Amino acid sequence: MNFSLTRFGVKFVFGFFLVLWRVWGAGADLNPTLTTNSNSLSTNQTSRIINATEREFKPHDVFRFAIKEDPSQGSLSQEIVVSDGGEIHIPITGSSTEYITVDIRGKKLLEIRNEIKQKMDENYYQDATISLDLSAVYSGLAAPTGFGKARVFGELKGLIPLPDGEDVWLTDALNSLPDNPMANLKKVKIHRTNKQTKVQSTIEVNVEKILKTNARDKDVKLMDGDRVEVLSRGIVF
Image 1 (cartoon, rainbow, N blue to C red):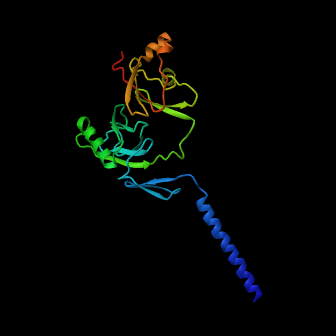
Image 2: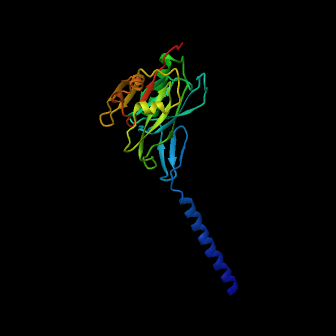
Image 3: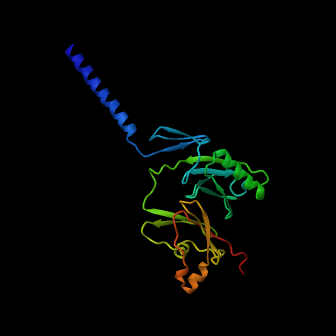
């Protein structure tokens, strides 16, 4: 009788600690994991369901985007990140250097999708089939700290890190990217959005002249959120 009670007690204690171990293990991973379908997104850190169709989107949110009729990629999707100014910049095709820009501030998913389709159909497609879904929500909790970024697009492409406390100049940033003889460095455009007023401005810089004459006083310091557009030179003989 005593032996049976002892065995029962051992099993009870073992089972109790096994349950504790499983509960602890399930809650040990505190890193947010994002999963999504076309209408919702959730994190296992907060168990919070986000209704993507009703959400008003914010900077650094991430979309999955595709155009079914895209001749270069078909239905292959790509990630689009909302800029600091609340815009998304969407390539006409997967291999194109030409973009359309949509201001997503205060808009919902269906409105954004319809605006993209309208702009694509106006100049590039006859009846584009747009796929646009929420991929990840930016909360700021897991954001990298210590640097900003500037994005270069067009004939040169790249993401330029801007470390805190260091000045990164336009000419140095472009020199760090792979060379492209088609890049027009005489009319490089910096698209900048004031984070406080949301006012957008464009700065045109003759990078070629700065490099040739060492006119560093004409150089421009890049700021977080800058989009640097490098156009094509056209036909080069």
